[in-house]
Image (cartoon, rainbow over all chains, first blue to last red; front, side, top):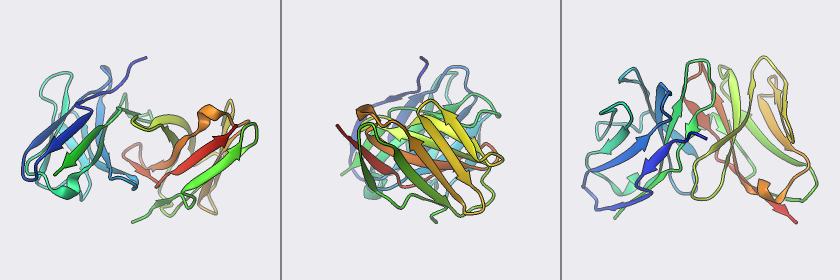
Length: 114
Length: 111
């Protein structure tokens, strides 16, 4: 069964450092998303990406965040200068087409900022 | 901004009995509702969905009920099995776009 793959599974970084979280969406999917879940809280939408551009972003997704699809397979989330409150589980998700409602999620990257 | 709420953080049910997980929403613009299941150290896995034009959708042991006037939906699992122990997230979507999640309910099935 096709799946969304995320690397690394766990990333520890010092406050102020840049991190890049990587995702390989399912190959024929066209819509890509990043979500995050702070420990004990709900899963929150960060950004959606379609046709090589951001289609929607939440208020969490400020200038410190960026996304990129550098080639035909990878989808990355960059946090330029990490803060302690960026510590969370980050989930990548992808969806095949407009009419499909549900998204497939990766297993997540646990980001710990120290 | 709690547009989707799951008021029960946890629920324990005996194996073989019915599990009922509840979810309330406030945004009447939502047109699709979904349930995701999440095991520890894994991403959410899609379980079942329902369009706002329906009031029930069934898939095997899982049934989702939607009461639009009450802005309430529920997931019924019957019979409950030990493998159903997980965190269940209710989510809602408008216009096939981003998902807005609830806070989750941890379901424990007691053998």
